[in-house]
Length: 594
Image 1 (tube, rainbow, N blue to C red):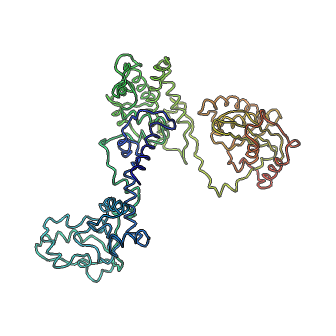
Image 2: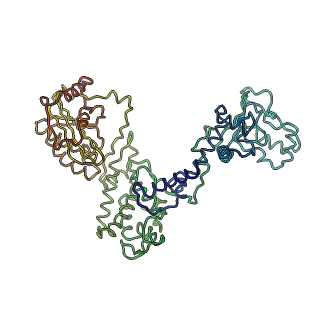
Image 3: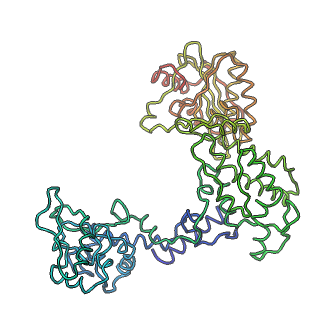
């Protein structure tokens, strides 16, 4: 990769990190070299194109050894190495300079040569004293008396095969010769170094391996890792700032906060922008990251409230990062996510309150601020899903359920494989029941949208249905609107036993729990609950798109083409709609919810 190409890719990465999708220029808050350090050092673990380029060059060197039959490898072997030995690219000391590709390949081979060892076959190629073999350092690294080593080499030989007996033992392992030359203590030291090395009998040639990984093969990931240096930070709460259970934007903000790079008064002053730097929360001290989010009276009130709510006592630190480092990381209890989401959401809401006071000239009293924090924590925890059985349930979990409005976590529904989903079809409801299928479609998010709902009996006959446009909406709004309109249609027709199915996990789970974690969607929940109360008996379930094909077909009739929904029945439905319904019934006439 050329220098210009590497610079261009680096610039694209930097623009993505700091500027986003917009063209406006933003201030880089953290140094690029720091961002490219490993995640355990508290940074973003981004790729440097220079290191990635060297990694790929080392891969070419590795392929010279492992794939010598390739045309490129045979060309380099003949032109620059002039040898039949395919390992020479990694073992020889120097070579003449050549084409740009060869020079690049040669300059990158050190990434591999620093981590290679030999796997012994017949022992004819590997140097006993000078090479690393069997994953150990070269024996010359452990013997300071180089004169004795040279004497043994002259008497016995240079290669591993010279130090092994011709016959192996009963287990098929090679036996080592006893060395009795010169200093007896050095001979005993050598015997201790090699006696536990198990070399199987083999007539195959010796091969080069990488001793840094179990697979013994080079990979781009390994090459990149061995080049990258760790930062100066020895301890970092990366399990809290990078945990997938924390909201993405919140953990990103926490990460920038722990680097002390959010745009507080002192940070803005350091980058050369003048302005007021008094803390707007207490109006008493200079605004800094540590003061605003941890030491300010408002921040202290929020932290003390949270510690009391979770029934925890922790030593008071002077710095936020020390407090986060001392924060426990519990992973085995039912509501352990409180320990992960609590600190990050407190920091997030304090920052939002600070911006509200500066830019909107409005403020919330402290009790309302902690109420917003409480609501956010409950929404995050109630929206989580678990796999299999819940975790350990303790007295602390029981106390948390009393102090917080927590509900039983939803079970994670594993995705069905594509081949299995082909067998999914619409299932007819039981006798005297009807089934309501609903769906929607949108051209964009937000974009022109339409809704679809259809009600059928146990014979697959259409009782009632509708489809049509509702204007511009986000992708989930039309789905819950279709459900509400479909329920209204059921009630209007006097249906009392209804099975309600849709292909949206968000809507189905939200209606089952009577809460949706989006304020635009949540306003529909009370209306739907009122409709459900008037129905004698109902069941709510999820179905994959393959079992929701009729309403999916109605969605394809046109998004946003009709101003108002069009209602139809068995008599007024088109032949295409009737054909789709009959195909569903004939393919899978079993009864059930799906």
